Length: 120
Image (cartoon, rainbow, N blue to C red; front, side):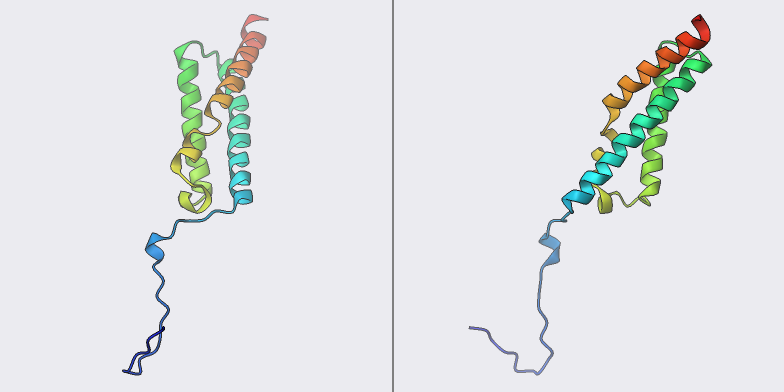
């Protein structure tokens, strides 16, 4: 049975939104994740070619890769206007997704460009 207020005050629906979990559209989340993978792969390829042309070897080349991935993460966060939770479910998705796949592409194009420019 629903009770009525005797004071004549306006009725308000009380909803406790603090316990609600954020909901995401699965299709949009999948599209955003796909954009992260494409961005990291593309910049890994470009970075690998640049590292090979500049003649980076050993640890210097890997440090260059980490620098490129940090810039990529910062650029993606800036594109999302630093409101990460509006577009992704966690920070890790933006920072770490596509990291290893990008590393493999980076090493492939790094060695390829290095061989073409400095060995042949």
